[in-house]
Image (cartoon, rainbow, N blue to C red; front, side, top):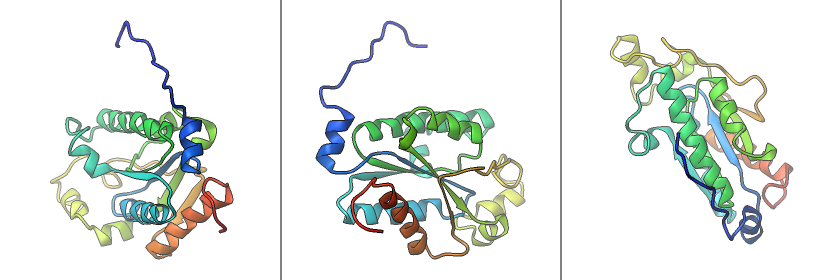
Amino acid sequence: MSTNIVWHQSSVTKEDRRKRNGHHSCILWFTGLSGSGKSTVANAVSKKLFDLGVQNYVLDGDNIRHGLNKDLGFSAEDRTENIRRIGEVAKLFVDSGQFVLTAFISPFAQDRELVRNLVEKDEFIEIYVKCPLEECERRDPKGLYKKARNGEIRNFTGIDSPYEAPVSPELTIETHRHTIDECANQVIAYLRDRNFIKGES
């Protein structure tokens, strides 16, 4: 634990930034199995927000592991640390007045709850990207399920490591039933309905 440190209050507040941007700021936390479409939907939502003039940024699981979290593996402990770090980074984006879209398997409910508790009540939107394991495995965009089945990858979520699906997420989107554009529109409609962004749903 760090010692002899004191939090320095910013001269520009989160409320100031939101007022300047003209919209709310929060975490859109996309969780689901590998291959469910988290990154694809998150990026589709990001583009729609960008076109609406809404400040946002996508934090993608694989991309983060290329840099910030490149020292972490896929054990339960490392997965928890991976999400903890992302939660702290996401909190900074919220404070900056932006929407931050995070696309992580984040298989453990306790870890997702930890991030929820880092921010205020209306600043964490859990989005369950629901897709049957069989469909995710059929898609297998990165060839990871095949490797996991062959024993080349250990601790792979859905195969030899558990995924704890959200019990009461703010939003559930089903990528095996709807197109990516339809799923993205569901997220945009959710944000509009809650006046997080401007415009009619």
